[in-house]
Amino acid sequence: MLPLGCRVASATVDAPLTDYRWRWHAADFEAAAAAGVFGSDAKVELWDGEVLAVPSMLPGHAEAVGTLCQHAFRLDETIWSVGSQVPVRLSDVSEPEPDLWVARGRRGSFWGRHPGPAELVLVVEVADSSLSLDRDVKIPGYAAAGVPEAWLLSLPERLLTVHRHPLPDAHRYQSVAVLEPAATVTHEATGLAIPVGELLPPVASP
Image (cartoon, rainbow, N blue to C red; front, side, top):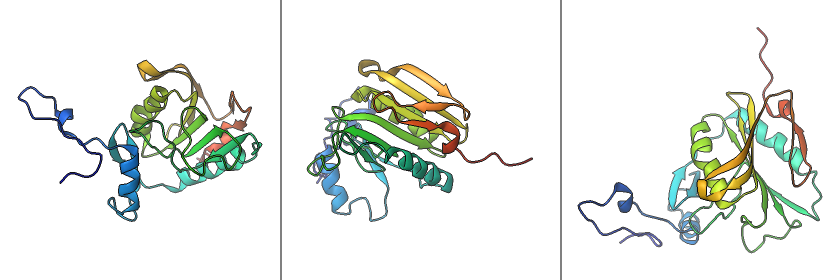
């Protein structure tokens, strides 16, 4: 018996491999996670109907997320809600947990549901060992959902890439800017300004 919400296409000789994959819906994914289907310590996210394992967080990643939160929590909570590594609902088949998100709506607006593209104004992903997943899967996924701004902080490269103005049908952003440590990033909707260097580890002395 298949898990709830999973569908398998009828087998045909010419069917592509993707037709044989189970496709999860967000409600069933949440129910399965609550029931412990993925294990008590598993870190997984739902992307386009597939359950993806997320790499463990390294110390530099954790430090960057903490700094992001310190800045974002200064936003006016009567206007904006802020979350870190808790779900957003991009669609019926995508429910990721960005390292940081900001949504339009006062704190306490999302007791009954996760914020979605209509409210989200910013998502941030911090990448170390997860760089290819964040760059090739998550950022295009946020663009496809219409999230207006997405930041990708690459710790190995010491760069912050700012994506703005999504082109959902193309799964990409129209504007892409790469910022180095000396720059300051300013979020369009909220005016939140963060020196990029504060989000990166210090350079080791030679």
